[in-house]
Image (cartoon, rainbow, N blue to C red; front, side, top):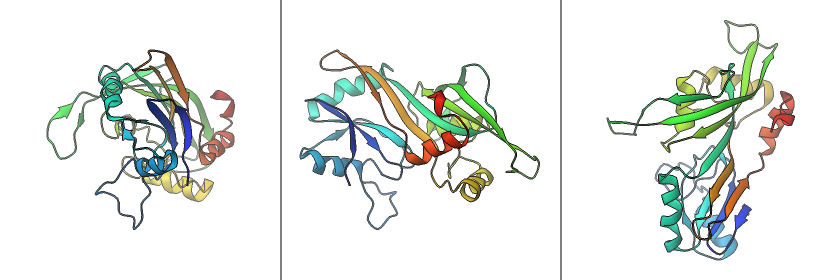
Length: 234
């Protein structure tokens, strides 16, 4: 397979990572033959590339690589200084707050006891109540489309923060609501997590020019936007 290239110059390349693809080789892969973005892009453009960040395996969307080792630190410095704006789209359970909101909730690093600062801004773009029962306590079901902006970069941050708010991301099998996931699989034939790394805005670390990258939504995500009459909202 080939990756869809969203941005490329002499220094960096951004691709649209499909859901289910890992960034690079990892001991957590349980597949017999997992597919990796790093190796796929290297073979596709015929050049060794260096991953600049990670996005979760079930998350789709923008993933950045450097074309040479010296280009890595200037880009990662922008992550550290929080100069890169990263917008995600997600479908979550329930109605979120009407106004823009901040989740300021420390998260524990895996296998370690200390808590780390973690902050996520989000904005509700749309909401819907459908006449189907996804929980035995309610005769209808409510959902929201949100744009999330992580201000820090903790593991599974958006997923864990939305779970903290009890607005679980649909299709999240680790931090989500299993009852909702089953409902979406049976009612909508939806087998993916509805979280997408949608837009990035940054100043190019080498040239200084303003870069805006937008990643098209996967077909399954667009199908849910159409189902819930949200397509015009993005």
